[in-house]
Image (cartoon, rainbow, N blue to C red; front, side, top):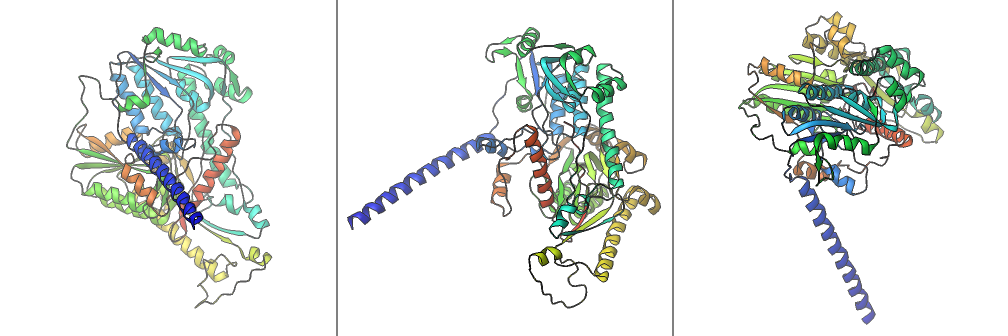
Length: 606
């Protein structure tokens, strides 16, 4: 009996210690989490150099700027810093007029998370750096081991320096697309992929063993347009002929400092200590930082405005609503465009008398038809009462265009990928797989069409006829929506549809967009359309996630947040992240009818 009580006491003591440690850990975790939402005072010293470290992703939506990511980093995951595009651009423009900021240093290497760091976003950041230069403040850039996208931004600097042993990987754009059709058939899975029309190749990677001519044509147009944008931008900034820039990519590719200096791409070579000496000479020595007088872009964005300047105030609001990510039904989660949630935000903006205009920023490859139509309906209703202007980001294809077509005015950038007006359906038929596994299916139905969407057997002629009629109806609905929203006749709408993607300039020429410009251009236009000039403030929705948002997401049934597994910057980790992203993309497809207006043509420039 004494032994029994001794064991009980030992167990209780161990339980008490474990409980105590858990409470301490929980307290520290909550304290750290709370600290993330408590802004710290930031002081901008006179004569500071604003340091723009590109080691970040640049999403469109402020929602992506998630404080919980810092906690994930503390738990051992690799976390990418994120600064939303409009916040970053407006911060650089503020620095141009801030007497405390003496110049800018651009360093580091861009990262991409989700749908961030598109060529459209980089163009806007580059334009903001040019405005800093236009204000008479020098911009320095430092190249170490950089890619084309990094150098595209840095090339606009007054002075571009490079580490003597650095390297510029300027190889062009290569695109690999995996096709799983033959692999699936080997195991007895027959992907039934239906689409409207011939350019709607969204399920090609699942249903086919190779790339179709239509898909190859579109991908070639996309990467050629993107590459031209980078080449021409660098050539213009550095005063080099475009032909010479292309020649360096095609003949050399991996460019060292001496090659770049000889050909006028950079202004000089410098070790890090030499760069620091140059900046100390320019901005002075800060004893506290033991370096040149500086402030990081992240700190500067949290700092109060310069003395003598005031934050803009107005009774008028332009609501900027972000649709970034795959369109899903319901509320959706971080990185998704929840049909119910975005529709509600647009509806709330319509009912708010202080909101004079709405800008819908779309950076989405589309998704479910059901969620897309919910958003499109609210765009249409709101546009009857106040201007709704759409700004297309890096991607606004398929469902991303569906939600845009009914707006008052559509802005597109030169490198926006848009269009893909079409629909697709996928049913993986596993009849042969079940036979191989000797799994037998017995079916009892009330009629010949009851099992049309079953994956356990091939489709009958009647079922195929039903599926094709259904797909035709959805396609006609999409084309009619575009024709009505864009003021086209049906024939013109069909001609630009067919599931084909268009780059921004081509979309503009074909009536799929009305104006060329940035998100800020769209905001200014919407304000003018509402008759309020520059008397307005901007309200972004969804905004940065609050403590309540994060707790709600953690407690929701489908919650999933974790550190990224493949967080390295080595080639293998990059490929594994890309594969992980493809799987995550497929898991998001939740349309209740299984019908998708989707176009996952992901093209990244490293």
